[in-house]
Structure formats: structure tokens, C-alpha cells
Amino acid sequence: MRGKVGTWVNSQWKYQATPGQFSVAINMYEKGKRRDDGRAVEIPLTVSLSCAALYHKLEPWEDSAAGKAAAKAAKAKFNDSLEVAFKKVIKNVTIPE
Image (cartoon, rainbow, N blue to C red; front, top):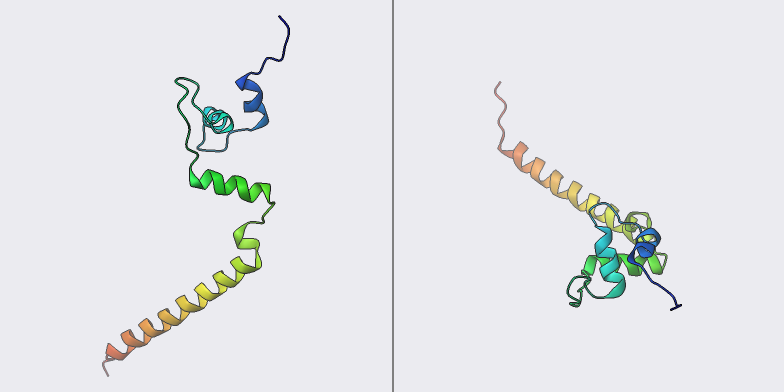
């Protein structure tokens, strides 16, 4: 009998596991079902979004223009709230003579 024989080992070599992820999970995602009982596998949203970002070759958020703008706005907001808090503390402090 001749034909193509597919093994789960090939996909393990093709798609290496990332830290915190077992290569068995990669194989389940690839096939869409579990090896042991054939139940359907639900791919977590974080994995789906990561795959979509890789597929579309998106740059990391912190390197993008939107990410830099968001970080700058958050830093400004933090500094403003820190200044307000500092003024409240100073207002309530009395310095002995």
C-alpha cells in the first residue's frame, strides 16, 4: 500500500512551541480536534489574534505610531495626576519654624 503518511511530528518541527505552550496544543489547533477523543478544539482568542497579527505582518504595538501616541498620552495623564496629588499633599503639610 503506497500513499502519503502524515505524522504529527512534522507539524511540531514546522511550528515550534512558544514558552508556556505545549507542542501538542499546536497540533490540536492545526487539526481542529483532539488526538485522544476527536473532540473539537476551541482556539483561545489570544492565540487567534496572535496568529492574525503574524499573518498580516503587524508590528509590535509599542513600536507602532498608535502605540507610541497611546504611551505618550498615558504618561502625560499620569504626570498630571501625580502633580495634582503632590499639590494636595503639599497643601496639607505645615512646616514648623
